[in-house]
Image 1 (cartoon, rainbow, N blue to C red):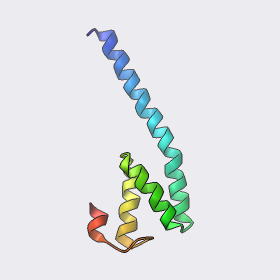
Image 2 (tube, rainbow, N blue to C red):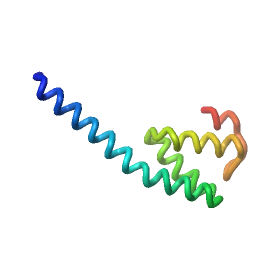
Image 3 (cartoon, one colour):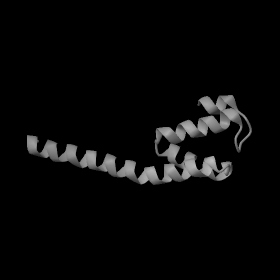
Length: 81
């Protein structure tokens, strides 16, 4: 495999990462807005969906919601997992 092929692969991977991040940013913003409005069940649904895709900030919100019992029964074990 030549240097040119390796460079093309790196660029494609970076573009994929940027595209995936931009796509999730809108959903994350929607989740945060929904959370701030107090619609915890909907916010939790959005955050859990994003967390399953590996969005770190969504994982944080899911943990926070379980820790403080926002829209779910308080569960510290679930919050830290």
